[in-house]
Length: 298
Image 1: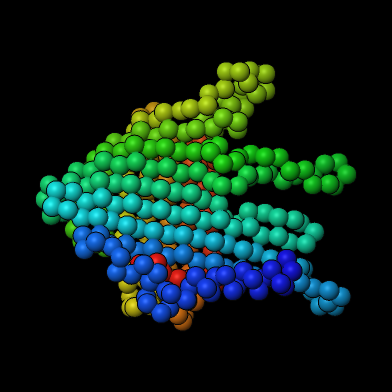
Image 2: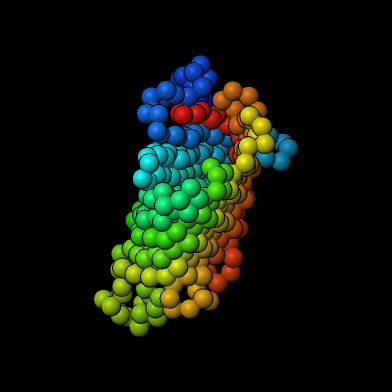
């Protein structure tokens, strides 16, 4: 990427971030009294270019855009909470090419009924997918890279309807347990069909399922803690098992430590652990350290 483009990107980010530094949040004070919001957006960019550099080094760049929102409205009868997580990032390395570093679109909407102060029946809906195509990389006999598409926007996509009972003793902790119906949508890559590979090998593509309903049980545990005005930690553990057997449990454990180094500058350290029986029988791990421009909307 040219230096001119980099300067424009930084100027654009700072222009949007300026109101956040001046007022504490882009839209602070615009919400009704019964609404609360925790909304943070961030832009991160790293760029290295080497030309006739005698020491070790490879030209590369990485960009990442994130948007994390937790918005809740509270009434006497019920509370309505919406979680939105948008992550989009890419890495380019000379000699290797472009690879995705992050790609997620997540929206969860929950309606809690105030049966008691801490026990709340709830209903909700969750949607998850990705933005960019995903690829599997290999080499041919001549050593050339072969890129095979394995996913794309809305393939797979997950739509989940839930209903159950939540235990919410305070604003920093909640435990949900309920029934869930998880739908997998996959029109081209077979994520909705457990026997996709066998059908492809047998030439039975016409019988591949594009939708899959999985009724089952779901658990969500969330906790967050502010050590100070500049250091906070949050964790979320999600688990789902269909009624076909407990050996098919899916799970995702997300952890994020955030440290505000200075106004508009934040350090984030994260660790995620995932298990999806349909994708891989082994546990998946992801760790990250992010540093860059961050501004708060609320």
